[in-house]
Length: 364
Image (tube, rainbow, N blue to C red; front, side, top):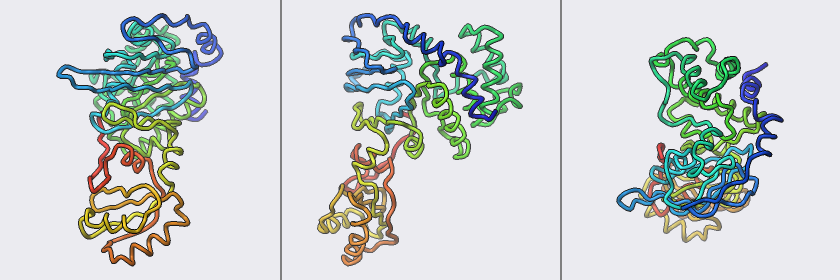
């Protein structure tokens, strides 16, 4: 049995026929007191309606966020520092109380039924909750006891998860001796111990090298396909979100500015772009480009790199490049490339437009 199959086997428990029966037997959702009505049953595992959060000092972190996540979906939340991702994640995992609006996870309201929500979810926080003085095995056993998982069943789950995360040989080593990638895999294994219906991952691959990140995502994808677990994640690695997520919500200044599949977001932008690296100040180049009658989205600017998305790349790109050369624009390099989710993010948030640099931050 390979790593992916082992991970799926280790976590399938209640997501098989028993899990489906449990979900069919869920009690009706109670009336929501104080924060509006609970959304109707649309088949969504996560349902967020008009969510607002205001912190002391009238700091509005969320300004009416609404979205739903279907069972078995990998749903990504993207946004720069301060966009509202971490606040949204905190509300859905019951660590932050909303100011208004409603959120239902696995059929339970996050305010009125916080304990039931916690029993239905697994969370891998950005900050580690592992005890560095314990071994990885002891950490997992401790958390299994906290979840009241019977010892025999816990040992089976732990063995399967350690093998799936390729940690079996290091299971008895102290957590402080593990690499960053190993600790992150151990955090995810811990979050899966309770056989959650929804797995929340806050920046699950932050700071890890590309090979380790890819391995983690392969395991998560295999888990989703085999056990139908729902995954809600936040990340600032846009190329990962583009490859892994079924849908993404781009959050900016407390609002969702786009919610769709990565493919649809790219199609709305234009699937190809002309990119040029200029010698001069991009602000002096943009008026010249505007005079060329660009048929597509306005140019995106980051540093001295100008990206021009095109609605029909194969037809438009060659002639546009010829016209740019004809204007005598001093370019160190110019070429054609496919657009990315990063381009869509910059367009939708306003960053990177009109000569302003755009950066997608990493922590919230």
